[in-house]
Length: 120
Length: 260
Image (cartoon, rainbow over all chains, first blue to last red):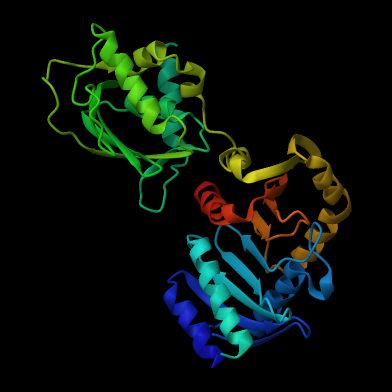
């Protein structure tokens, strides 16, 4: 189940505070991890941010082409947005603490999204 | 330099933000700035009570005994070396040993991108009367720029851009609307700056709940040539960057070290 995948990713990374699976075509969060306590407005904002950064409708946020992975680091958070390779509307939105090992997290989050998107 | 100036500079350094890596060691050289040997001498110059300074860079380590703002000598290095200078107390009366110490440090860390230090309890080394050579004296003998040693910390955005320069193929740094620096093929970045950035920032602000003072926005593979795009924002500074995707993690880590 999707929620089990999201829970497993969140549990593996101590600094990860929320993981959500979304559909870019409808700009809706479909599933969150079971510990997430984000309100509806926060989830909507997260999905809006994913749509902007990953370039919904094929429009790049910046530069030449839409990205498969985008991130926003602030002083308090690292937000990571990933798009499934074979299903461009399937995206993962993740909220992490600032001290996250970004490379390791992105690698695991990509694998998680691939499993969800391919229905494994 | 007068003693008062030296004291003022020490106080400035001590009051500056400590930049720690994930192991708790203090980052003293990033992106080769200051040069690793200058960073070592700066640490020696800051050491009054006898300590073992353990430096690490790129899988190599150097342990130096320092006291009274003087380098007494190199205690050990890793990977192991059979250099005669290891274990010898430095003395101006033996310039060959002083030069050998410099050569060994250059060989081990001269080209290191990053260097950290830990200050550990001292270990037995030479005779207590053998005081070594002062850091300032070594800087003179080794031709390490004093200005480099005396430099006060750079502003955060400048630090970030300097540290990560090897990862960037081009950069456009703008402060309060004025271009303050440009590197590489910045024409493409200038086009993005004039046609896309403002609209993007407006759209992005609408998705944020509350203003975020410093932000690093990364867009993987956003350029046709395969490079990724980043927008770094801090206090009136905007840097538009084209970077190599494989440096993403290192950029994130240094952003957090500098801004968080």
